Amino acid sequence: MLRSGYTTGACAAAASKAAVHYLLTGSVLEEVTIPFPEGQRVTFSVYSSDILAEDHSETAASIIKDAGDDPDVTNGIEIKVIASFSTCAGIVLGERLMLCGGEGVGIVTKAGLAVNIGEPAINPVPREMIKKAVYEVLDQYRSKSASTIFLTITVPEGRKVAEKTLNDRLGIVGGISILGTTGIVKPISSKAWTDTILTSMQVAEANDRETIVLSTGRTSESGFLQACPVPEESLVMMGDYLQFSLENARNYKFRKIIYSGMWAKVLKGAMGYKNTHVRNGALSIAEAVDFLRTVGLDETHEKELKKCNSAREIYEKLLQIDGGLLIKEVCIYAAERFSQLSGIPVEIVLVTPKKEIAVWIKGSV
Image (cartoon, rainbow, N blue to C red; front, top):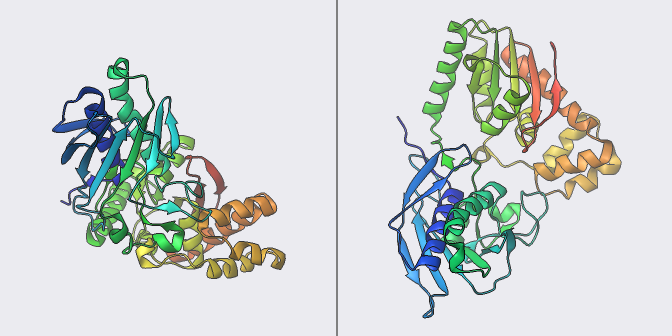
């Protein structure tokens, strides 16, 4: 069985809590426990702790990222956080708490990403994890200081590691992104994933489920379940193995498939991608726009869309153009294509990052 690990966001949160604890108490922590988005608490070993100012107004702590058995380029790198009373240009994270990006953390330079241009590439969930972890210390020791605390996230090897990613193409310059939606890295192994998919289908059939829900990840699955609870035996977490899942579904007695995914995955699937993971091919904006022409994109909007940097930005532009009519057409096209691959009627559920359903193409196609 493959071992799970932890995201850069989780490591940054743990290092932040350790650094702030050192700043306020003068006490070094060998281990630090933080809350995770799904309610569990996880303990990390603190790799290093340092005093960076003689008056003890600046401290640092770091965590070594353990990605488990996932082939992650950031596995084994040091995530370091400096906690200080000194001002730095940052983002308001909470009352008397600021967040800054330091060496090795990329800066966002293009639209269409999860954070604004000019901000450090620290995604929303990691920001919230950092905030909650640090406030566990602040709530206990706030009386020791009423000053604003500044957190600077640094990744000493960040620039070097970023060269192995697509960050530069996406508009993240100078380092890596601090990522994660659950805090946990689940190992990506082709054999492990496909075996799990087939096992899930077998369980569904054995429990007389005529409909299965193929989801691309936790957010898409959770978004669907909030709107339409189904027995857990109906759920198949397929990840990026789109064509594999659809073609193998025909080997079972299912009468309907519900595909639940977010925009980039739905778009890539409609365009013919067999596997939607970025390592199997980054989305070509030019090809995406050409595809959108086949489902009704007006020529007057082509140039505007070709300037987009990501699938997210295409989605936002399409909402502005026609209120989402073309987005719905993409979902209809995907439903038709997926139905052909599986030989089973497929419904498409388009889930937003907020776990809301934006489009649901129902019925036989």
